[in-house]
Picture 1 (cartoon, one colour):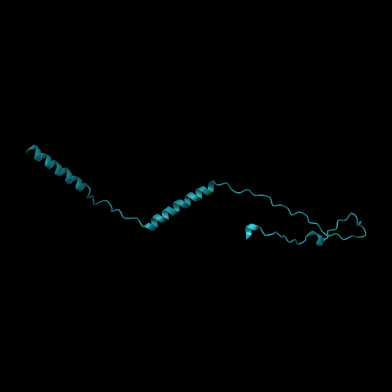
Picture 2 (cartoon, one colour):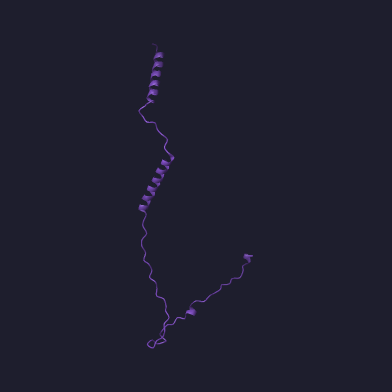
Length: 109
């Protein structure tokens, strides 16, 4: 056998063994994953990350509720309370309607 024939036979054997190695019948064929499965896995990953982020966020501290301030009441003079020291609030003098008038501006026309 010549050197050239030996090289050809060697190349054929190597090529044949590589082809036969790729034809392994014991392995399971790979399938294309369902798109809904991929979306569900992505959603669960995002939800887990948001949960972890929320765990490390500081919580709001409670604030005290302001107490209502006492309001003025109308005092009715009696025989035991002197009239000069009793503050009397007149409800008609506390609030007055007010109409605010502004003249038209030259820019408005």
